[in-house]
Each structure stands twice: as C-alpha cells, then as structure tokens.
Amino acid sequence: MQRIAQFFKVSPDNFMQAMKEDFPQYTEEDIRDMYDSLKLPRRATKGSAGYDFYAPFAFSLPPGATIKIPTGIRVKMDESWVLKLYPRSGLGFKYRLQFNNTVGVIDSDYFYSDNEGHIFVKLTNDSNEGRTVEVSDGMGFAQGIFVEYGITVDDEAEGIRNGGFGSTTQI
Image (cartoon, rainbow, N blue to C red):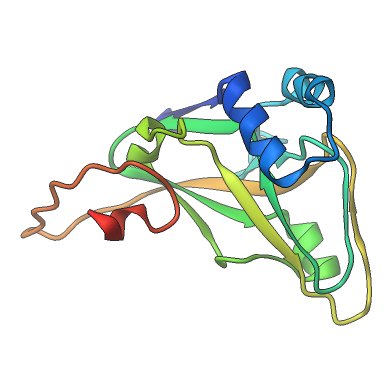
C-alpha cells in the first residue's frame, strides 16, 4: 500500500463559521463540543478501501430532504491522487441516500484553499419506500476512497485553486 495522504481537522473558527451558516439552532458551546468530538476518517478493517467519515451531529433526513454537512475535515494528499466521496454503502442501499453531486471529488490542491480545504457533504434521501434516514452523532455516513490519476501528455494546466464548488471554472 502507498501512503499518500493524511486527514486533519479544519480550524475551530472555520468549523464554527460553517456550522453557524446552516445550523443556527446550535450554540457556540454546542459547536465547540462537536469540534472537540470530531473523529478523523479511518478504515474499519485492514481490507477496507474506504475511509469512513463520521457525522459531527445527529440528523434525520425524511424522503426528498437534503442536508449540507460540514465535516470539519480536510485532507493533504500527494499530487497525483484524488479523494472520491460516496455515501456509506448500507445507507445508499437501504435508503437511496445520495450525494447531490453524485460523487464528491476532492483534488489534491483543495487543501490549500482559503477555506482550509474544508470537506462538505450534501446528501439527499431519495427513498422510494418513504423511509427516513436517522444518523446519530459520530456515525459513519460517507466514505472516501483515494484514487491515483493520470494526465494527458500535452497537459499545460497552470491554474491555482482557491475554493471549492466551481472554483476551477472561475480561473
């Protein structure tokens, strides 16, 4: 196995700001407690390909509902790698839990963005059976898999990333 990456928490201020934007029901003390309890992604078994991402707070997602979750996590990885994010298999299978962008793609240069490379996950419960997804605080809800990639022989990309969703098309 190649060791090509390392997970970190974003700064406490970054996490506080992200949580306050979309979850005003939580107090600053609640958010500090969540931050202190954040678990870095990890594999469950020696043979696991995916690194489990854990919910920083409990949430319910009824059919058709969407939620944007600040994970409090960032990742530093070697240049020729990407982290691809998916819902945990069991949640996708039982509830049709889906990422709104289908697959999350975390590029190696995202770590250096102004937002510290803070990884967000936007989920939708696309259940056809009317089932509500219940995720408890600290439960694995997403998984990330590192994938090596190549580029074309005539590639001349020189742009520098600063941001997340859609930032590379604004260069």
